Image (tube, rainbow, N blue to C red; front, top):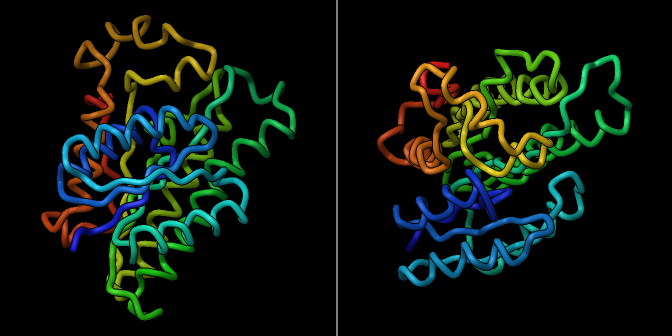
Length: 248
């Protein structure tokens, strides 16, 4: 029987690359998306074309009822969850803290922090031996911004990822004796669509020469780290914050 992974924000970027990599590693994959059903369908099509098992599941992770429905669908369609990748997240336009309004802050933290908490809560309820589960793993997608701070651009995003780092460390200790490993990856500058959604579509090209490796990373390079953290090869790795930053 295939292990089962739910990937939030799985229709594009790092999430989509992780879905494809996990399928190649033998996972049945639930591809969560917020609004872009066509992109999610394409990820599932590619997985199925290669002989894999995948479904799409719509949910806004910032809405608790959506999260509950998403997990119920995965239960019904695929079975007992083995892994969760908390990848769904948003960034906003470059802005100083003294210009941020509360609506922006709520949107940022509702998605990036509360969404990850609620998804992890539901995963733990299913995977923990304390609740009758068979164990599993959670990988949170943080960001190098959590230690760089994002000054002058998106301190709110960086702070939300700092919360994810702390969440990862605390949850890892909380469920370590219950068969669940919890880790995070912290990507650096990765060539995905997230820069365009933050109003900086040329950001990768503009700063590539300033990076230690003289290039941005790829979504697949981050995906490979995530899939390793999900694997038996990482069986004694929990509470780790794995930087995938090219030394940034």
